[in-house]
Length: 96
Image (cartoon, rainbow, N blue to C red; front, side, top):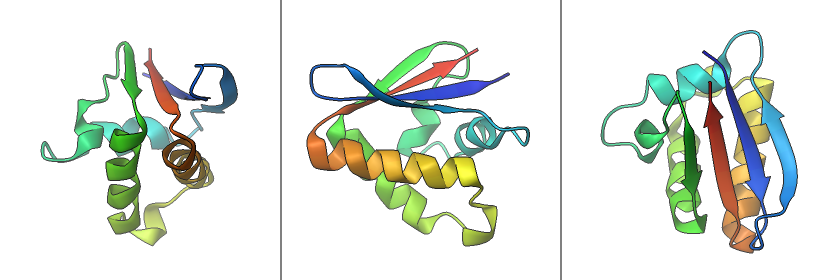
């Protein structure tokens, strides 16, 4: 299982891409989420898209995520989430 995240602007042009790391940080972050979390809805097998409102909720969840579990790839995701929220963009999650 691997994950990737594309950061899309309002016109859905790719601004950046975040790839999975060796620790499978992205996969674990979504797969181990509680059912009440917005990130629980990210599919590990196909595409999932979040708009800026969902990105805001994800940003709030990431603020509560334990700092000792924040890997470099999750820190990049947090930056991307803020970018999407501030610019009304999209996050495209690609599970494989």
